[in-house]
Image 1 (spheres, one colour):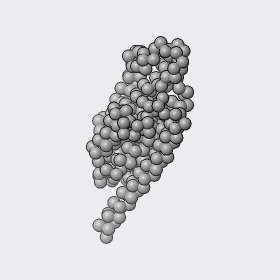
Image 2 (cartoon, rainbow, N blue to C red):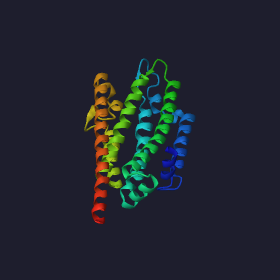
Image 3 (cartoon, rainbow, N blue to C red):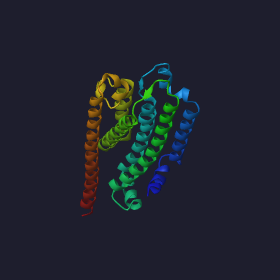
Image 4 (cartoon, rainbow, N blue to C red):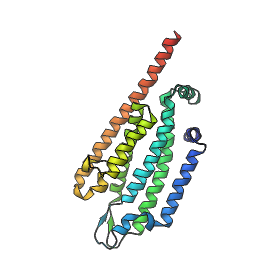
Length: 251
């Protein structure tokens, strides 16, 4: 089923678009592997220091910013086209179900591909950190690194879906999520939300106690669940409304 819905999305915008994305991400991982010193900036920055707990910022940058935003944009275009009436009719024919179920299956398929590429990228960069770790330094515990990264992904994906289903506009949704995530969180270094930003663990890590960081991340997980719940409600209401309009017009 995953391959079936990936094949549908693969030819929606540009033919073989997902194949191109996979090739590009794979090529970048190979480049990072072959030339780690050109891509893993933190290792050069912490070189020569002893007893330093290195924050693997490059993992967060490549996995939680570049790769994540790439797939957010893909999700916007793949799902955003389903808001048109013509796509709803296609959904009923191809998916054999209502539009929200068709969109859910497409979303699940693209997320499976994202998880695979994300895992490969995460493992690649994490292993390079372990390989080229400066003497006397140490990485943060793996559980912490993975927990922070996964929390960021869950929150941004859920927020992105909510924004898309509320605005029902690809351009507006892309602008809003880019302004929040890339400008406020990445470029402004969480100046608005400060250490409570979803990326705050990267830039304010040593300014915030570990217990507070964990509480912040748990808060974002709960908030993500709330966002997903409202997104599901909105998607169902949309379908029911359109069905009722069609039924009334027929009568």
